[in-house]
Image (cartoon, rainbow, N blue to C red; front, side, top):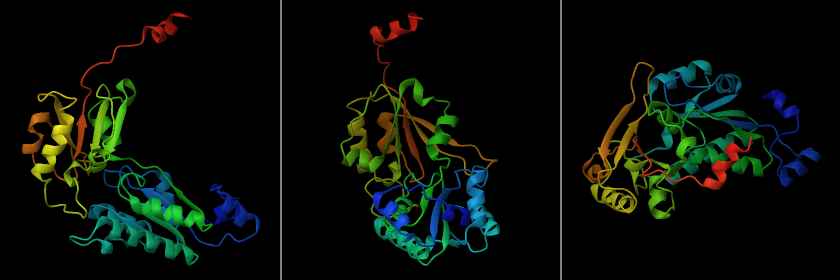
Length: 282
């Protein structure tokens, strides 16, 4: 990370460019990485290198194997779990985490923030910290990681380029009245946390909220349309959980926060013959 400070940063906002030219870019930086879904096995070599060489490491992971491994890679590693509390609004938790990351970088420290899965998917903390630090003239970047969606596509053997793929956070899908194409696959994240302001990992989604979701989906899919409830495998020796149910059964099913819902296309869209003739032109 020291070498990165010697080069012109890639964060090319006008404010940052002015700071670089005037010599006002301060010491301190952040790189945000992900561990993937499957413990240790899905962390990229690039992410491992960043964890090892950081002056301080902060992390949020969901099982002790990965936690111990991070601490072995870098003894400075500190969990951000202290900011979670039962019933505490999630937005407040994420802001406090971001505050901690930003304050540490501002103190002149090269930080690596480690998050479960992909560090930019359903991780408000990482985005907020990067935005604030870039505005202040600090080097801040994110590395890609393996997400639940990546695992789902592999485990269910589906190709998002065949029919197209739409992906929404479940509460936003309902609250934002998102438009989508039922001839493409649909993936809904965090269905088990519909409308929940705080984390309740031990409680399934409320039935009345699943009824609302089902009612919206029934406008586009038949009651007997089969959907998958998916949980990615957390450890190399484990299998993913894939449970197929009919859409009409969704309100009566226990949906936990870790579950992702996959909805296959309802029908095939007819090809445009004008476009298909392109294949005969060569």
